[in-house]
Amino acid sequence: MEVVVGPSGKRRWSDAYKGRVVAETLVPGVTVNEVARRHDLRPNHLSAWRQQAKDGKLAVPDLAGAEFVPVVIEPVDAPSAITSTVAIEIIHGGVAIRLDGGTAAARIVEIVHALSGTS
Image 1: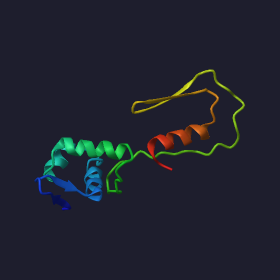
Image 2: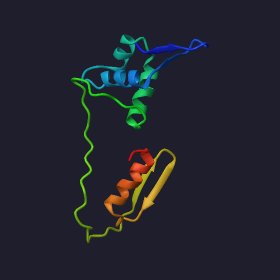
Image 3: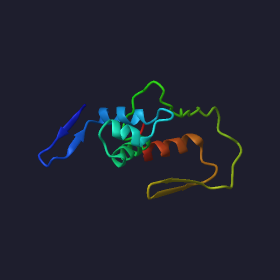
Image 4: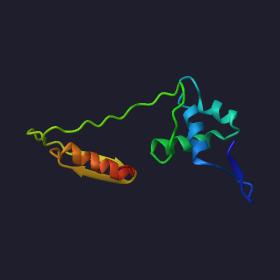
């Protein structure tokens, strides 16, 4: 176990440890409460770590039996000649970005990556 107890008595866990514990919650049939009990954690701490992983702020290692949803971004072969009058709205936290419906998919991907802090 990778737990450091500071002078105030608060426990601190490494990101690698947090990621491994979060991965255990991704196994079908396993509950957050069950994993929290097994690691002597509060379920709300583990839920916060899961949110960090969803936000891309915590790396989660592969774990046998864990289920992940793959993200696939396909390259755009050629710009589409079809334009849309529907606006595109990207909401991230308190930020809302509205784009013209004809915005290129590659540009939308760039914006999403910039918002999520990935490259």
